[in-house]
Image (cartoon, rainbow, N blue to C red; front, side, top):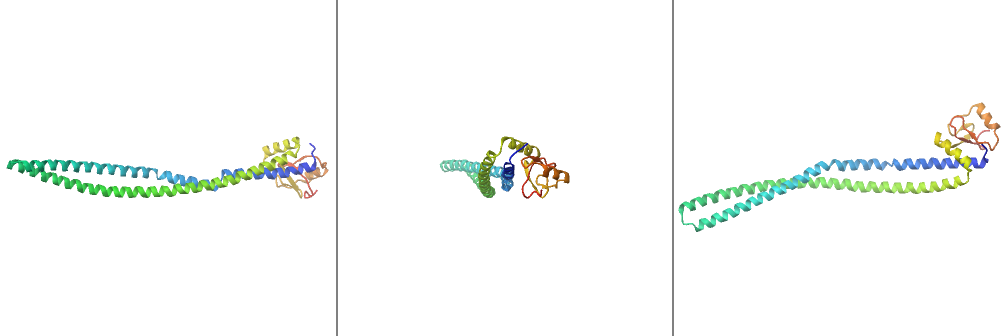
Length: 244
């Protein structure tokens, strides 16, 4: 294949842009903050069982207090009835029986109120534990927002750079013939490098010095001949630094 030497040299600019595009894309998919985000999200998820258990304990304890309060109200109502019946009774036997029942109900009320105090302490402890878990989750969630914003900022910057690189690539591509460009793309897709500079007899595609025979073949080639690196198969670009 033949191609204008200046056109061939523009492939070095194209390769540089393609290298930077590849670096940009790798950077976008491997933003270091992603690992931090995954760790914090995992930490939040790890608090889930404890949060559910603590919230359940609070609800169960509140329900238990309500039941105790209902029992106290029932005892109070029964005591009020008994006191009224006692005060209205003229039977010594009935009064004695009612007073015994009132005393029993009063003892029952005291037991219920003591139980209520114990359960209220349990509720306070459960609410304290739940508050601690919620505070931890809030810290984690705040960190998640911070890291996500950091990732978004990095991605926005990388995307802007990628847009500029794509525009630069388009300008270079427009200045290269379709045939030469097709060869460059083919070699880059196959071997990872489409074009590289020959510098003092060393191929930039393989970083290996050409043999005397290969170097002699390059010297004898016409200036507009398109030469492939014998080791990396990329298009070998010649200039004043090639040592020919």
